[in-house]
Length: 260
Image (tube, rainbow, N blue to C red; front, top):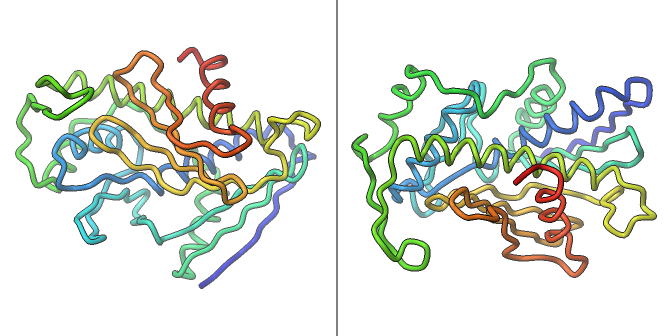
């Protein structure tokens, strides 16, 4: 196991702090994005998401059951590739703890987060990219998809290509809102009870189940789970919160500031 703790201070270049923070968060979300390969609807929405991330593809791995994870800029991620904990220690200072069973991935993550390349997501996918990804799925690329089940899916639903694209666009808008909200909270004065300044924050899991994106976040090792659903009115739900209601704070900040 390799662990590296790095601290970056942007006091002399404060305008770069927000850009760096948001890039690291984007990279973490991409590295944890996954879905179960045997669920046809999940795979289709996963494809739609991945195709809108520049430089991103996906690969299959078996965790008892076949799953899809991202392959970003040639690097294949999975649950155990890398663990990253972020902490803002001062107004323009951030501490990043990178842990991996693969020594090379510690260096890789640091390089990916530190280089000048911008992470572009929610871009319009090229037809070549979509065609390249399609053979990796086990399902024929036939539309529409019929979804059956209970609750939200109590009636048969037809999922068109346009709905996939629109759903992916909304999910990325929600992710941008999440990253922006975390940036605000992690740089809020400790005098504010909602502040996450000085707290360890980790993106633990980002899993897609049908059309719902489940985001598991650890704050000082306490679990928070947010669900993003592009088809519902409010679009953000808190499935699990801690005693300080950090999940509700994040949700409310997203709803107030990002036109959700």
